[in-house]
Image: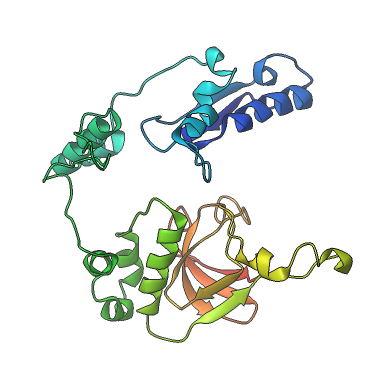
Length: 274
């Protein structure tokens, strides 16, 4: 029986999720103690992203935070003081950037009273005028680099972050359009089991939904496109979060090369329905 559960990035979770886990563990283990007697390690930083509540106010987000849960009084706080990733690489610029991120989280940067926006120091980052310029800076000369035999290594060395999925989708589409070759389109099954219920749930409406953690109804890919698995298929080789690069696109199967983990460089086949 499991004795320890580690919940990473817990600060993004809704307090109801923690409370539901507590009740579930008590039921499964038939133990009325907190978390069914299991030790729960919550890892995260409240200076980062809090729970995302659509169309909510800042007060709603704070109320959804784990600190607002009745379980929080049982939490014993332990603090890490060394950024091991920066420490092991001994990169002075990365160390300065990490310190600036901590200052940002602590609210030490000045805020414009008119716009309520944070004013970054000049050495915080390099600014670009548009998303198109950002893509050129991070992914320069995509067409020629794609033909290079070091394409996979080149791809793993760079990434663009965005605060919302909508921004990620737009940037991904722009970058993928620069890849040579035709695109293949995969669509999810959009039929209902009970046809009488189809009137209540129009297919067009269902196809427009893009809930977090799920692929879109219409997925367009090219050879060379980076992709990510959203479910466990063959752990630890193919699991939720595994990144791959498309090698071949067929009607029902996608051949891809694993980019991360112990199986890095291995080619695998993924059924389109997965």
